[in-house]
Length: 395
Ligand code: PMP
Image 1 (cartoon, rainbow, N blue to C red):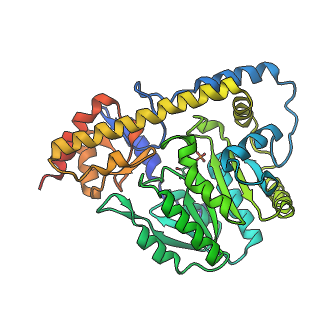
Image 2: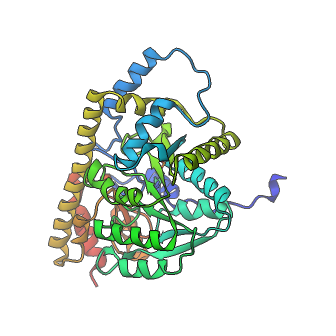
Image 3: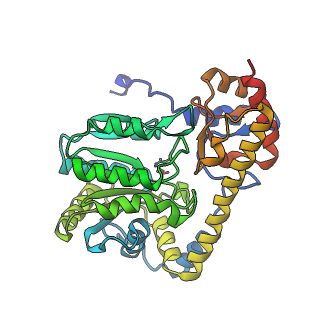
Protein backbone atom coordinates (compact mmCIF):
# COMPACT_ATOMS: atom_id res chain seq x y z
CA UNK A 1 0.00 0.00 0.00
CA UNK A 2 2.83 2.42 0.66
CA UNK A 3 3.59 2.69 -3.06
CA UNK A 4 0.40 4.74 -3.26
CA UNK A 5 1.95 7.50 -1.16
CA UNK A 6 3.06 10.67 -2.90
CA UNK A 7 6.28 12.47 -1.92
CA UNK A 8 5.51 15.10 0.68
CA UNK A 9 6.32 18.72 -0.14
CA UNK A 10 9.71 19.56 1.37
CA UNK A 11 9.52 21.66 4.51
CA UNK A 12 11.43 24.79 3.51
CA UNK A 13 12.96 25.41 6.90
CA UNK A 14 14.11 21.81 7.35
CA UNK A 15 15.66 21.92 3.84
CA UNK A 16 17.41 25.15 4.78
CA UNK A 17 18.90 23.55 7.92
CA UNK A 18 20.32 20.72 5.79
CA UNK A 19 21.77 23.12 3.21
CA UNK A 20 23.38 25.20 5.96
CA UNK A 21 24.90 22.13 7.61
CA UNK A 22 26.38 20.99 4.27
CA UNK A 23 27.93 24.42 3.52
CA UNK A 24 31.71 24.20 4.21
CA UNK A 25 32.26 27.99 4.24
CA UNK A 26 33.64 29.61 7.36
CA UNK A 27 31.59 32.47 8.71
CA UNK A 28 28.29 31.24 7.27
CA UNK A 29 25.28 32.76 9.04
CA UNK A 30 22.13 30.78 9.88
CA UNK A 31 19.06 32.99 10.18
CA UNK A 32 16.67 30.19 9.19
CA UNK A 33 15.32 27.99 11.92
CA UNK A 34 13.34 29.76 14.65
CA UNK A 35 15.27 28.94 17.80
CA UNK A 36 16.80 31.37 20.25
CA UNK A 37 20.59 31.44 20.27
CA UNK A 38 22.98 33.15 22.66
CA UNK A 39 26.19 34.94 21.72
CA UNK A 40 28.03 31.63 21.49
CA UNK A 41 25.50 30.34 18.97
CA UNK A 42 23.95 27.78 21.30
CA UNK A 43 20.37 27.35 22.37
CA UNK A 44 20.85 27.16 26.13
CA UNK A 45 19.02 25.13 28.72
CA UNK A 46 17.73 27.87 31.01
CA UNK A 47 19.10 27.90 34.58
CA UNK A 48 15.69 27.56 36.22
CA UNK A 49 14.78 24.73 33.85
CA UNK A 50 17.95 22.84 34.76
CA UNK A 51 17.34 23.38 38.49
CA UNK A 52 13.69 22.28 38.28
CA UNK A 53 14.59 19.25 36.18
CA UNK A 54 17.23 18.18 38.70
CA UNK A 55 14.86 18.67 41.63
CA UNK A 56 12.06 16.76 39.90
CA UNK A 57 14.38 13.86 39.12
CA UNK A 58 15.11 13.46 42.82
CA UNK A 59 11.53 14.02 43.99
CA UNK A 60 9.69 11.91 41.41
CA UNK A 61 8.27 8.70 42.86
CA UNK A 62 6.24 7.26 39.99
CA UNK A 63 5.80 7.31 36.25
CA UNK A 64 2.23 6.12 36.33
CA UNK A 65 -0.39 7.81 34.17
CA UNK A 66 -1.52 11.27 35.14
CA UNK A 67 -4.90 12.82 34.23
CA UNK A 68 -6.06 12.91 30.60
CA UNK A 69 -6.49 16.67 30.80
CA UNK A 70 -2.96 17.04 32.18
CA UNK A 71 -0.97 17.59 35.34
CA UNK A 72 -2.98 19.57 37.92
CA UNK A 73 -0.06 21.70 39.18
CA UNK A 74 0.98 22.51 35.61
CA UNK A 75 -2.49 23.59 34.55
CA UNK A 76 -3.02 25.61 37.73
CA UNK A 77 0.19 27.54 36.99
CA UNK A 78 -0.43 27.97 33.29
CA UNK A 79 -3.97 29.41 33.39
CA UNK A 80 -3.15 32.64 35.29
CA UNK A 81 0.08 33.05 33.32
CA UNK A 82 -1.95 33.06 30.11
CA UNK A 83 -5.07 35.02 31.07
CA UNK A 84 -3.82 37.23 33.93
CA UNK A 85 -6.07 38.25 36.80
CA UNK A 86 -8.92 39.93 34.98
CA UNK A 87 -10.77 36.75 34.03
CA UNK A 88 -12.63 34.58 36.55
CA UNK A 89 -10.59 31.36 36.49
CA UNK A 90 -13.81 29.34 36.93
CA UNK A 91 -14.49 30.25 33.27
CA UNK A 92 -11.07 28.99 32.20
CA UNK A 93 -10.10 25.45 31.41
CA UNK A 94 -6.85 24.15 29.98
CA UNK A 95 -5.39 20.96 28.66
CA UNK A 96 -1.73 20.04 28.73
CA UNK A 97 -0.47 19.64 25.17
CA UNK A 98 2.73 18.55 23.45
CA UNK A 99 4.05 22.01 22.56
CA UNK A 100 2.27 24.87 20.87
CA UNK A 101 1.61 22.80 17.76
CA UNK A 102 -0.14 20.16 19.86
CA UNK A 103 -2.16 22.86 21.60
CA UNK A 104 -3.32 24.41 18.33
CA UNK A 105 -4.21 21.03 16.90
CA UNK A 106 -6.23 20.22 19.99
CA UNK A 107 -8.07 23.57 19.85
CA UNK A 108 -8.86 23.15 16.16
CA UNK A 109 -10.39 19.76 16.99
CA UNK A 110 -12.39 21.32 19.80
CA UNK A 111 -13.69 24.01 17.42
CA UNK A 112 -14.54 21.33 14.86
CA UNK A 113 -16.69 19.58 17.47
CA UNK A 114 -18.28 22.74 18.87
CA UNK A 115 -18.67 24.76 15.67
CA UNK A 116 -18.89 22.61 12.56
CA UNK A 117 -19.00 24.94 9.60
CA UNK A 118 -16.80 27.63 11.11
CA UNK A 119 -14.13 29.14 8.93
CA UNK A 120 -10.62 29.62 10.26
CA UNK A 121 -9.09 33.01 9.57
CA UNK A 122 -5.33 33.29 9.49
CA UNK A 123 -3.05 36.25 8.85
CA UNK A 124 -1.41 36.55 5.46
CA UNK A 125 1.42 35.78 5.99
CA UNK A 126 1.37 33.54 9.03
CA UNK A 127 3.36 30.70 10.55
CA UNK A 128 3.05 28.21 7.66
CA UNK A 129 1.93 25.40 9.94
CA UNK A 130 -1.39 27.18 10.63
CA UNK A 131 -2.48 26.68 7.05
CA UNK A 132 -0.86 23.24 6.80
CA UNK A 133 -2.61 21.85 9.89
CA UNK A 134 -6.00 23.33 8.99
CA UNK A 135 -5.69 21.91 5.48
CA UNK A 136 -4.67 18.53 6.85
CA UNK A 137 -7.75 18.57 9.06
CA UNK A 138 -9.98 19.55 6.14
CA UNK A 139 -11.05 22.80 7.82
CA UNK A 140 -12.00 25.82 5.70
CA UNK A 141 -9.40 28.59 5.67
CA UNK A 142 -9.86 32.30 5.08
CA UNK A 143 -7.07 34.86 5.16
CA UNK A 144 -6.80 38.45 6.29
CA UNK A 145 -4.00 40.70 5.03
CA UNK A 146 -1.71 41.65 7.86
CA UNK A 147 1.58 43.18 6.85
CA UNK A 148 2.41 46.30 4.88
CA UNK A 149 5.78 45.64 3.20
CA UNK A 150 6.15 49.34 2.42
CA UNK A 151 5.97 50.55 6.03
CA UNK A 152 7.01 47.38 7.87
CA UNK A 153 3.92 47.81 10.07
CA UNK A 154 0.60 46.01 10.44
CA UNK A 155 -1.79 46.94 7.62
CA UNK A 156 -4.64 47.31 10.06
CA UNK A 157 -7.10 48.92 7.66
CA UNK A 158 -6.72 46.05 5.20
CA UNK A 159 -7.00 43.54 8.04
CA UNK A 160 -10.25 45.07 9.31
CA UNK A 161 -11.67 45.37 5.79
CA UNK A 162 -11.08 41.64 5.21
CA UNK A 163 -12.58 40.74 8.58
CA UNK A 164 -15.76 42.44 7.46
CA UNK A 165 -16.50 39.15 5.68
CA UNK A 166 -16.32 37.20 8.90
CA UNK A 167 -19.40 35.17 9.74
CA UNK A 168 -20.78 34.67 13.21
CA UNK A 169 -19.02 31.72 14.82
CA UNK A 170 -15.90 31.92 12.67
CA UNK A 171 -12.57 31.44 14.40
CA UNK A 172 -9.96 34.18 13.96
CA UNK A 173 -6.38 33.15 14.72
CA UNK A 174 -4.29 36.01 16.07
CA UNK A 175 -0.65 35.95 17.14
CA UNK A 176 -0.65 37.02 20.80
CA UNK A 177 2.69 38.81 20.41
CA UNK A 178 5.88 38.61 18.33
CA UNK A 179 4.14 37.82 15.04
CA UNK A 180 5.82 35.07 13.04
CA UNK A 181 7.06 35.70 10.34
CA UNK A 182 6.73 39.50 10.16
CA UNK A 183 7.72 40.79 13.62
CA UNK A 184 5.03 43.50 13.26
CA UNK A 185 2.55 43.52 16.12
CA UNK A 186 -0.86 44.90 16.97
CA UNK A 187 -0.89 47.85 19.36
CA UNK A 188 -3.35 48.22 22.24
CA UNK A 189 -5.72 50.41 20.22
CA UNK A 190 -5.83 47.82 17.46
CA UNK A 191 -6.48 45.01 19.96
CA UNK A 192 -9.35 47.11 21.36
CA UNK A 193 -10.80 47.69 17.88
CA UNK A 194 -10.59 43.96 17.12
CA UNK A 195 -12.29 43.18 20.42
CA UNK A 196 -15.19 45.50 19.62
CA UNK A 197 -15.45 43.92 16.18
CA UNK A 198 -15.46 40.38 17.66
CA UNK A 199 -18.13 41.37 20.20
CA UNK A 200 -20.34 42.86 17.48
CA UNK A 201 -19.84 40.16 14.87
CA UNK A 202 -19.66 37.10 17.09
CA UNK A 203 -16.33 35.65 15.99
CA UNK A 204 -14.13 33.80 18.43
CA UNK A 205 -10.44 34.62 18.78
CA UNK A 206 -7.86 31.87 18.98
CA UNK A 207 -4.64 33.39 20.25
CA UNK A 208 -1.45 31.65 19.19
CA UNK A 209 0.96 32.42 22.02
CA UNK A 210 4.38 31.01 21.17
CA UNK A 211 6.66 33.89 22.21
CA UNK A 212 5.27 35.34 25.45
CA UNK A 213 8.01 37.38 27.14
CA UNK A 214 10.26 37.60 24.09
CA UNK A 215 8.86 40.92 22.85
CA UNK A 216 8.75 43.68 25.47
CA UNK A 217 8.18 41.66 28.66
CA UNK A 218 5.77 39.07 30.06
CA UNK A 219 3.14 41.62 31.10
CA UNK A 220 3.71 43.96 28.16
CA UNK A 221 3.41 41.14 25.61
CA UNK A 222 0.22 39.88 27.25
CA UNK A 223 -1.54 43.25 27.60
CA UNK A 224 -3.18 43.31 24.15
CA UNK A 225 -4.57 39.80 23.91
CA UNK A 226 -5.50 39.73 27.63
CA UNK A 227 -7.59 42.89 27.19
CA UNK A 228 -9.42 41.08 24.40
CA UNK A 229 -9.86 37.86 26.37
CA UNK A 230 -11.17 39.76 29.39
CA UNK A 231 -13.83 41.58 27.36
CA UNK A 232 -15.22 38.71 25.28
CA UNK A 233 -17.43 35.84 26.39
CA UNK A 234 -15.35 33.19 24.62
CA UNK A 235 -11.78 32.85 23.44
CA UNK A 236 -8.95 30.32 23.19
CA UNK A 237 -5.20 30.42 23.66
CA UNK A 238 -2.69 27.96 22.21
CA UNK A 239 0.33 28.33 24.46
CA UNK A 240 3.86 27.10 23.79
CA UNK A 241 6.78 26.94 26.22
CA UNK A 242 9.23 25.97 23.47
CA UNK A 243 10.83 29.41 23.20
CA UNK A 244 10.30 31.19 26.51
CA UNK A 245 11.36 28.16 28.57
CA UNK A 246 13.70 26.80 25.88
CA UNK A 247 11.92 23.42 26.08
CA UNK A 248 11.66 22.91 22.32
CA UNK A 249 12.19 19.17 21.97
CA UNK A 250 10.61 18.29 25.31
CA UNK A 251 7.23 19.61 24.14
CA UNK A 252 5.31 21.66 26.70
CA UNK A 253 2.19 23.58 25.74
CA UNK A 254 -1.41 24.15 26.71
CA UNK A 255 -4.76 24.43 24.96
CA UNK A 256 -6.62 27.06 26.99
CA UNK A 257 -10.32 27.83 26.71
CA UNK A 258 -12.08 30.82 28.21
CA UNK A 259 -15.77 29.95 28.18
CA UNK A 260 -18.80 32.11 28.84
CA UNK A 261 -19.76 30.25 32.02
CA UNK A 262 -18.11 27.76 34.39
CA UNK A 263 -20.58 25.15 33.07
CA UNK A 264 -19.41 25.72 29.50
CA UNK A 265 -15.80 25.53 30.68
CA UNK A 266 -16.61 22.14 32.22
CA UNK A 267 -18.04 20.92 28.90
CA UNK A 268 -14.96 22.17 27.07
CA UNK A 269 -12.72 20.40 29.58
CA UNK A 270 -14.52 17.11 29.00
CA UNK A 271 -14.17 17.53 25.24
CA UNK A 272 -10.47 18.39 25.52
CA UNK A 273 -9.83 15.29 27.65
CA UNK A 274 -11.71 13.15 25.10
CA UNK A 275 -9.70 14.66 22.23
CA UNK A 276 -6.48 13.84 24.09
CA UNK A 277 -7.67 10.26 24.60
CA UNK A 278 -8.26 9.89 20.87
CA UNK A 279 -4.94 11.44 19.86
CA UNK A 280 -2.31 10.23 22.30
CA UNK A 281 -4.05 9.76 25.66
CA UNK A 282 -1.49 11.59 27.79
CA UNK A 283 0.70 14.54 26.88
CA UNK A 284 4.39 14.23 27.83
CA UNK A 285 4.87 14.93 31.51
CA UNK A 286 8.57 15.71 31.86
CA UNK A 287 8.62 19.23 30.42
CA UNK A 288 5.26 20.20 31.90
CA UNK A 289 6.56 19.18 35.34
CA UNK A 290 9.57 21.45 34.80
CA UNK A 291 7.29 24.40 34.03
CA UNK A 292 5.11 23.59 37.04
CA UNK A 293 8.12 23.44 39.35
CA UNK A 294 9.53 26.73 38.06
CA UNK A 295 6.21 28.59 38.23
CA UNK A 296 5.44 27.06 41.65
CA UNK A 297 8.62 28.39 43.23
CA UNK A 298 9.20 32.13 43.72
CA UNK A 299 13.00 31.95 43.39
CA UNK A 300 12.94 29.78 40.28
CA UNK A 301 10.27 32.01 38.75
CA UNK A 302 12.40 35.09 39.42
CA UNK A 303 15.44 33.42 37.87
CA UNK A 304 13.45 32.27 34.83
CA UNK A 305 12.15 35.82 34.35
CA UNK A 306 15.65 37.28 34.71
CA UNK A 307 17.07 34.93 32.09
CA UNK A 308 14.11 35.52 29.79
CA UNK A 309 14.78 39.26 30.13
CA UNK A 310 18.40 38.72 29.08
CA UNK A 311 17.25 36.72 26.07
CA UNK A 312 14.72 39.37 25.10
CA UNK A 313 17.27 42.15 25.51
CA UNK A 314 19.78 40.31 23.38
CA UNK A 315 17.22 40.14 20.57
CA UNK A 316 16.15 43.80 20.88
CA UNK A 317 19.81 44.87 21.07
CA UNK A 318 20.55 42.94 17.88
CA UNK A 319 17.56 44.58 16.23
CA UNK A 320 18.86 48.06 16.99
CA UNK A 321 22.40 47.19 15.85
CA UNK A 322 21.07 45.59 12.68
CA UNK A 323 18.86 48.55 11.76
CA UNK A 324 21.77 50.96 12.35
CA UNK A 325 24.21 48.89 10.28
CA UNK A 326 21.73 48.54 7.41
CA UNK A 327 21.00 52.26 7.49
CA UNK A 328 24.72 53.01 7.30
CA UNK A 329 25.52 50.50 4.56
CA UNK A 330 22.49 51.13 2.35
CA UNK A 331 22.35 54.83 3.07
CA UNK A 332 18.58 54.57 3.47
CA UNK A 333 15.85 54.24 6.10
CA UNK A 334 14.42 51.23 4.33
CA UNK A 335 15.30 48.83 7.14
CA UNK A 336 14.50 51.03 10.16
CA UNK A 337 11.44 48.86 10.87
CA UNK A 338 13.70 46.09 12.16
CA UNK A 339 14.34 48.07 15.35
CA UNK A 340 10.59 48.66 15.80
CA UNK A 341 9.63 45.02 15.41
CA UNK A 342 9.49 42.58 18.31
CA UNK A 343 10.11 38.89 18.71
CA UNK A 344 12.53 36.59 17.00
CA UNK A 345 11.61 37.33 13.38
CA UNK A 346 11.43 40.07 10.81
CA UNK A 347 11.11 39.92 7.08
CA UNK A 348 13.83 41.90 5.39
CA UNK A 349 11.67 42.55 2.33
CA UNK A 350 14.05 41.06 -0.25
CA UNK A 351 13.05 39.17 -3.37
CA UNK A 352 13.59 35.38 -3.51
CA UNK A 353 16.42 36.04 -6.01
CA UNK A 354 18.13 38.40 -3.55
CA UNK A 355 17.71 35.84 -0.74
CA UNK A 356 19.38 33.28 -3.02
CA UNK A 357 22.25 35.66 -3.81
CA UNK A 358 22.86 36.16 -0.09
CA UNK A 359 23.06 32.39 0.34
CA UNK A 360 25.14 31.63 -2.74
CA UNK A 361 27.59 34.54 -2.54
CA UNK A 362 27.74 35.34 1.15
CA UNK A 363 26.79 32.14 3.01
CA UNK A 364 23.80 33.88 4.63
CA UNK A 365 20.81 31.59 5.08
CA UNK A 366 17.27 32.87 5.51
CA UNK A 367 13.83 31.64 4.51
CA UNK A 368 12.84 32.42 0.88
CA UNK A 369 10.38 35.13 1.93
CA UNK A 370 13.41 36.86 3.58
CA UNK A 371 12.31 35.99 7.12
CA UNK A 372 15.29 36.21 9.45
CA UNK A 373 15.66 34.76 12.90
CA UNK A 374 17.21 37.78 14.61
CA UNK A 375 18.51 35.60 17.46
CA UNK A 376 20.59 33.72 14.88
CA UNK A 377 23.00 36.68 14.65
CA UNK A 378 26.27 36.92 16.47
CA UNK A 379 27.01 40.63 17.13
CA UNK A 380 30.20 40.24 15.05
CA UNK A 381 28.14 39.11 12.03
CA UNK A 382 26.18 42.30 11.73
CA UNK A 383 28.57 44.46 9.74
CA UNK A 384 29.32 41.72 7.24
CA UNK A 385 25.61 41.00 6.93
CA UNK A 386 24.71 44.66 6.32
CA UNK A 387 27.46 45.00 3.69
CA UNK A 388 26.26 41.84 1.95
CA UNK A 389 22.67 43.10 1.91
CA UNK A 390 23.76 46.49 0.56
CA UNK A 391 25.77 44.81 -2.20
CA UNK A 392 22.87 42.50 -3.06
CA UNK A 393 20.18 45.16 -3.38
CA UNK A 394 22.36 47.73 -5.19
CA UNK A 395 20.81 48.31 -8.61
N1 PMP B 1 2.99 29.18 16.71
C1 PMP B 1 3.95 29.90 16.15
C2 PMP B 1 3.60 31.24 15.58
C3 PMP B 1 5.25 29.43 16.13
O1 PMP B 1 6.21 30.18 15.57
C4 PMP B 1 5.54 28.17 16.70
C5 PMP B 1 6.94 27.64 16.71
N2 PMP B 1 7.68 27.77 15.59
C6 PMP B 1 4.49 27.44 17.26
C7 PMP B 1 3.23 27.98 17.24
C8 PMP B 1 4.64 26.06 17.86
O2 PMP B 1 5.73 25.81 18.56
P1 PMP B 1 6.01 24.40 19.24
O3 PMP B 1 5.07 23.38 18.68
O4 PMP B 1 7.42 24.08 18.93
O5 PMP B 1 5.78 24.62 20.70
